[in-house]
Image (cartoon, rainbow, N blue to C red; front, side, top):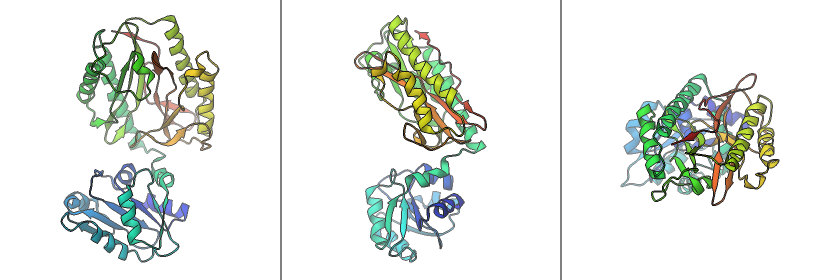
Amino acid sequence: MLAPVHAVLARTGLDAIALVPGANFLRVFGKDFHQMERPLVVVVPAKGDPVAIVPNLEMGSFEPLGFPGKIFDWRDEAGYMGAFKAAGAALPQLGKGTRVGVEGQRMRVFDFMALQSVLPGATLTDAHADISSIRLHKTAEELAALREAIRLSEIALEATVQQVRVGMTEKQVEAILLGELFKAGCDGLSFDPIVAAGDNAAKPHASARADYAIKRGDALLFDFGGRYRHFSADITRTFFVGEVSDHDRAFYDTVLAANSKGHEVSRPGITASDVDDAVCTVLEQSQFASFKRHKTGHGLGLDVHEAPQIMRGNQAKLEPGMVFTIEPGLYRDGETGVRIEDDVVVTENGIESLTSFPRELRIIG
């Protein structure tokens, strides 16, 4: 169970790692817990037994995990600091000069402060990247779940675009998409979907509007994904409703060329920076260079955004089993936007696109 954590401890020289509910916790223990006002923290030392601080109301879910260490549970009426103090006393090896790695992008301030107060001699340090490396290479079982999340999401997208009509609002289309995702068999949502038409599509993280009627010639951008067995799809496709102008067609084709370049250059051994540079160069050498806003992509799995980040400056090399997105985009403020996003996995010889939904320009409605 804790072997991946011990491997990180050995590689980094950290004296302990503290985990809180989230993707890394799920990867280690096979169970997810909600982060609410009640702290749940597991500390795994390099030497000695691990400890867990667990809200009593979660014990019915935590005990079946078979945690191989000491559990200190607490009740609301007593507060959590008693459990933290007991856990700290059970970790005498984490004294002065020791280092405890925490998930800097996940651990909350009050979790951090409580842990620091009971391990006063230890230094709590951000080890998020090192801890998250346990999820960097997907297993065959994980890839199977991811493939299914993507397959179901693509079924839902096709069913949705078949129903789009001029005059609908973005909110109406969003409601259709949500219904189709669950109808297809998704367990949940990867994130709140983006359904954006016309000028709203120029906002990379737009929210669907209830007061905008989709018009002929509008771009209609979908950025969404369903979850299956905890794994997240992340797909973006941009359509045009009723018709498309020559200018918008050229705009779209530029993004498509950049997306295709990402597929072409990605392979084991190439760096994430090299992929981003190749994709971004297509956009930067086009007539639409001034409308580029973001990097090429990000890792994908239990989290929608995880390592590897596909961006210039990231010298991490792609390796088999890594999953990431290729999602170039162009955005004309106040007018329109286009993004085309695929999910891919690195293989021994190149990459395989897990998304199969056509990328060519399509007019709907």
